[in-house]
Amino acid sequence: MINDEHKLKKLGNIFKEAREKAHLKQSDVATTAGVNANYYAQIERGEINLSYDKLQSIAKALNIKSIDVS
Image (cartoon, rainbow, N blue to C red):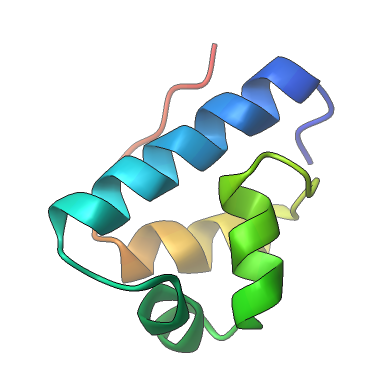
């Protein structure tokens, strides 16, 4: 789990940029990743400390190969 607020916001921005680049709605990504749309929206805003499994499923839904939030 990611515990740093700055890193959570950066991760959310990475997901949002990838989603917008792919011309997807939040609900599209949420459905593909197997998460609730409201939960996904909170992730994009950096409000949720997500598990590694959720991170992987969302990254896969967005076709993201690697993530650097350092």
